Image 1 (tube, one colour):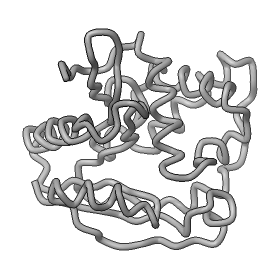
Image 2 (image 1 turned 45 degrees about the vertical axis):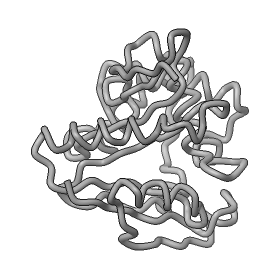
Image 3 (image 1 turned 180 degrees about the vertical axis):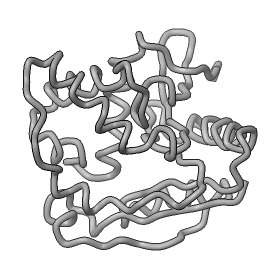
Length: 208
């Protein structure tokens, strides 16, 4: 397969929206973004597309993403970031711009599902939003992307990397273990299980 990787651009926003939504679904049908936004898939994608191109960078901004593509189109991607610089506080700063473009007012309360998401490991390089289009899965796309994003973390001086998975997603856990990740802990949550269908989330970490 003729595959190359590159940094994402603003014009990748539609693909990034799909990628973020797919990563949020993991191995279940209804993912975290559907719960947070309580919108149809079409409207979720519209929201996420705008979210990737805000003026303020954050963990879901296009500038954090590395994409894998064939000659014709992107087929997978993930993001890597320093959460102290581009974490959730920056996301909250960027959200009003998205709501303004949609002609809506940002909600005044934080969605309850956010409390179910485990915190970042202090000082770790964080990997988020890992997904591949269905017909290119199990063809080494994520392996290549992970190798490159972990190298980027090393280049930036990080000594550990972190990612989170849904509890019960054994194939994903095994795939990450091949890249040196190990299970750090699990965060079971009844509300998360009720809304998502997975018992909770788990944190994985590796040395760089």
